[in-house]
Structure formats: C-alpha cells, structure tokens
Image (cartoon, rainbow, N blue to C red; front, side, top):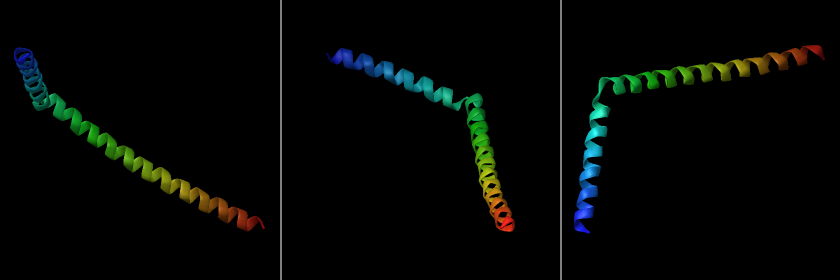
Length: 68
C-alpha cells in the first residue's frame, strides 16, 4: 500500500514538474498576454456598446417627445 501511494506521488510530482515547465515556456506567456489584451479589447467594445445603446434610447425618447 505504501509503495502504491509512493508510486502515485512520484507520478504526480513528475506531472507537476512537466506542467510548471510548460507554464514557463514563452509560448504560454505570449498566449496569456494575448488573452489579456483580447479581454481588454472586449471590455472596451462592450463599454462602447452600452454607451451607444444609452445614446440610442435618448434619441428615441427625444424623437418621441418632439412628435407629441
């Protein structure tokens, strides 16, 4: 039983080292940086959409007011 646990522990430690090495690779860092930039761009666009929707509502309200 101890040998089984030690075997699994050894396997997990190797997997951990492999993943940590992968995270240090420049390609991964570049992907993370690119994802952050895309999220910032998405947030900026969503903000613009909300502002345009609000502006649209104001124009519609003004048009409705002028028709009466």
